[in-house]
Amino acid sequence: MKPATPFATFASDLARESGAHLMSYLSDAAPEKDIRLKGPTDVVTRADHEVEALIAGRIREAFPGHGLLAEEGTLLKGDEYRWVVDPLDGTANFAHGVPWFAVSIALEHRGEVVLGVVQHPSLEETFVAERGGGAWLSTRDGPFLRLAVSAAATLQASLLATGFAGGQLSARDAALVPRFVRAARGVRNLGSAAIHLGYVAAGRIDAYWEPALHAWDIAAGVLLVEEAGGRVTDMDGTPLRSGDVLASNGRIHAAMLEVIASEGPRSGRGAR
Ligand code: 2AM
Ligand code: CA
Image (cartoon, rainbow, N blue to C red; front, side, top):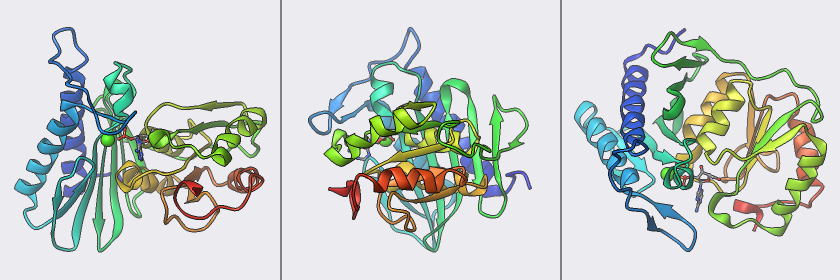
């Protein structure tokens, strides 16, 4: 069924509104981005905070009882519903004017993600999944089309993606990159976990791995992949608990895990 529940409509509209606000920063008459350092290489901009405030305000207004966890620090205690939000996923791209960044909005019910929306503003693509309802893509406000993961069955036939969250790549994780470069058709880093997961759901990317992500980076995207028929686990193959994510079309999951395991056993975030 197409994503037409009140929650899905609310979150899709909100993600589009948020995305349009982010795009206003890329125009000629753009306001100053006010890029600030969060860590030695980690940046945050005025837009991250503005969009987080916009989303928090809309949620408070529409669902006053709901909780909220968002990357830039907004925390609302709530009832059995909680929104998990990254107002701007791919801030480094955004700060440098590279138009590959996303808005990620997920809704949990009693701790389980039941709705995920990823908005890619520069292409006006809206990825939406509701638990049990499939994964869908609407472009420029057009009709929703059903998504399915790819049919690729080998690494040689696969386009992979990865990322280097926080720049804290362990030697073991760094060693995975050349291994996959040699094994696959290509390895991309588009700079946004949410977009990578949306692309696995859409069958554009066959598998994506990245260590040390946060809940807001992946909450919406994981549901997209699962609802498109794919598989998401920790990078050691166990159910996803840490932020070390492996998402795939399912068919090449074992082959991905085999390469990852060949660099040694893992435990915990970032295998540090
Ligand atoms: P962000 O742009 O919202 O920070 C890029 O590899 C991915 O990693 C992006 O989704 C990015 O999200 C995320 N990321 C960047 N810095 C991070 C950090 N310090 N910890 C976890 N994830 C991070
Ligand atoms: Ca962010």
